Image (cartoon, rainbow, N blue to C red; front, side):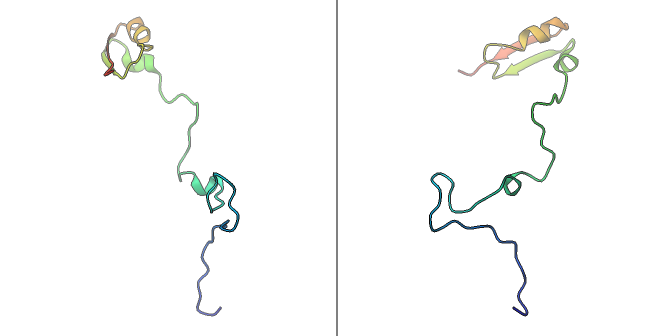
Amino acid sequence: MEGQTSQKQTSINRDKPAKGQGVRKLKMTDQAPDCEIVINRPLYNLVDLVKEKNVVDIGCGYGRNQSIVESVGGQWTGVEPF
């Protein structure tokens, strides 16, 4: 063992892998990015961003943001490519 460096080894499941899981057993910490993860936490207030502004909503779908923009004096233009 002298002269060998130790390496982090990932558990391998080559003999009988569970269906749909592949051959490596990865934990969530192995796959998660090395940064802050934000889930379902407000990142900004849309009302403050669009107040009295002209807004082009690309990919607007059914225009769910139209009433928000117009309620604070903005002008909303929806663009849906479909």
